[in-house]
Image 1 (spheres, rainbow, N blue to C red):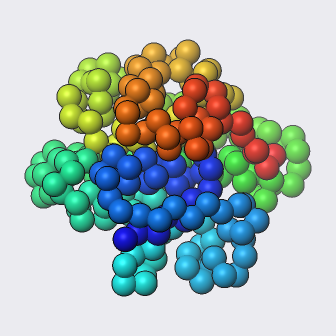
Image 2: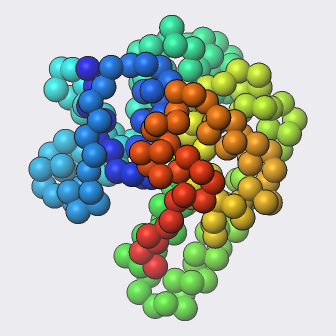
Length: 219
């Protein structure tokens, strides 16, 4: 049985949804942001980051894209990715790494901007540039969905859609603004929210309805 170390609306959301979609056995361990910073958690996740996934043998995985990659490979019968080793799987992995590195990575940098840039004006200018960069990445997602949707891998729902959904609730300045600009992304969000297995999970994170996420941006 897995152990999911989970903070509401943080990067563990996609993993939480994926475990539910796969009906994989797991224990959900809710944590607070304060607990994540404690040395006890860093013993499990050296970066002190969420998500973290405890394995049956006592080891712990971290980095959201790595956990998604592990789970879809460990449970191929759940069909949450294309067939392992296939060209489609290669494309799946490219998209996963793109979203993790670019959208998630830049979003995290903007969120923690105050830890890197102390001057408020300079920090504001930096965050504006970051959000412009992220906006270009969402345009790429929008065009892919428009060309070959309704899901990121075409007609097959996959873990990619859960990952994109998680990123979309963090949209700047709001999820609603992101949806207004990118209607195909909005459709994907609505389709994810409509999946029966996810209702309880999304309610537990407070994001079953659009706009449930409220940023606690650190400035």
